[in-house]
Length: 93
Image: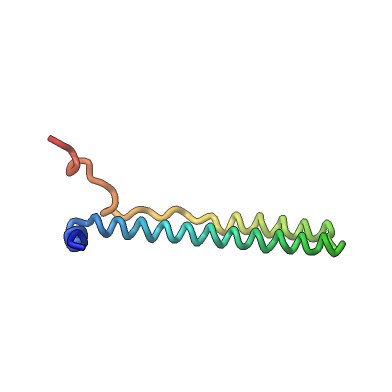
């Protein structure tokens, strides 16, 4: 607990918080993509089991997946300047 105030003062704690937030963001995006994929797949399986799966269904799913790829490719957020190590400060003389 004593390291938190000094960590905030020198900036290392902020960097860790940023990295944790980015990790949570990417995990949430991964989980969302996985849930969407599973929903689409289960819908196709249900239609196939009922004998109602058609080529039109597959074309629609293909178009949906292609549009999702283009829309959901997030740019990796840039690291704040505080998170980028300064080589002049970290050099051992």
